[in-house]
Amino acid sequence: MSTSTTHIHWFRNDLRVSDQPFISELNVQHHFGVYLIDPSLFAQLPWGFRKTGIHRAAFLRSQLSALQTTYRKLGSDLLVLYGKPEEVLPELVAKYNATLSFQQEYATEERTVQTRILQKIPKNRVFTYHGNFLVHPKMFSFHEFPKSFSGFRKKVEKLLPNVQRYPEIINSLPASTEVFQTIRPNCVSLHPKTVFPFNGGELAAHTRLQHYLSQTRKIDHYKRTRNGLLGTDYSSKMSPWLSTGALSVSNVYAELYQYEQQNGANEGTNWFVFELLWRDYFRHAGKYYQDKLFRASGLTNAPSPGKMDKALFHKWASGETGNSFIDANMRELFHTGYISNRGRQNTASYLVHELGLDWRWGAAWFEHHLLDYDVYSNQGNWMYIAGLGFNPKGKSVFDTHFQSQHYDPKGAYSKQWEVERIN
Image (cartoon, rainbow, N blue to C red):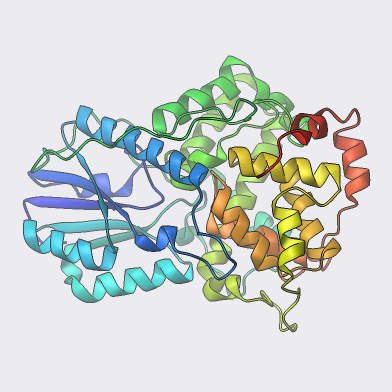
């Protein structure tokens, strides 16, 4: 990077200060962070709704508020602007004669923005890097991407002891060049039945991680409880912070490894690592396949599957299918922005295999609502269910009656959301 007195970091899905590669680049007098609210984040999708809904937007605001507070405590500041990154960032770099850093992304829209930015800013003024991986891409290479998760896991799990981390504790940052406006508080209140009643930000993320590990040792029972539906502790609930990068996946793994050293590994900790690797699998797949994650046929050459029936989709989205288990999950999603992994698999299967709708419609609805929306995991899991990639069995069809009887035998979950209609 060229010599400059000012450095700007563009935050994307890395809303934290700890475990950050760009920290090592801060041999400057001034530094500030920037988050850009791209108008496309709230764009109207062809499916009939906006890309980002109120719950996801409210959690993002909470994350940004927490990050700005952290930045100010460390002597710098975070600027939050509304505008297109490819227009705003080159202007800021020119205005402050600054260098710029950001984490690379691989989905279609994100790559397009990156290309436009790099066309407008000299290469010696930009530092980019691969982030948010558990096993970093530089640690291995694929001649052909594994067609199944098992093939991926066998290749990378032996690399886990060498997971790379960056400085975890930052005592201060170079001073900001100016003071920015404080982010206004959220205006969306939490639903009283939500299973994710947590704040955004890395402090809240670390607090939750310690609660789940050392304070309660709920991690020991993770394999048995992970398919739960009610309460805050049936799973770790780390995904909203991981998806936005308020907590790095390498940090989670390091804390888990330390826990195992002190308390011993068990089926709960082993399965948790298994799930972290699933997340990594889809992120690596996004880097490898890129645009194919958004095709109607996915990774296959099959004709476009699924129909476009607005009436059927509305029944599914509003929790009015008549299937109490599916409807309960869809109402929880609408009212809270979160549902369990078991709920996601069942509702996705129902849309694709029972209703015969285009899987991308359901994926977009999840994108609209989910607090923990992650483009790679979202697209990858929907394709897996639809049988359009990553699934060696071809597709996954869930018997929702059996699932309801097995995971909600007394109907407590369905009853809890039965009265929560969607207007």
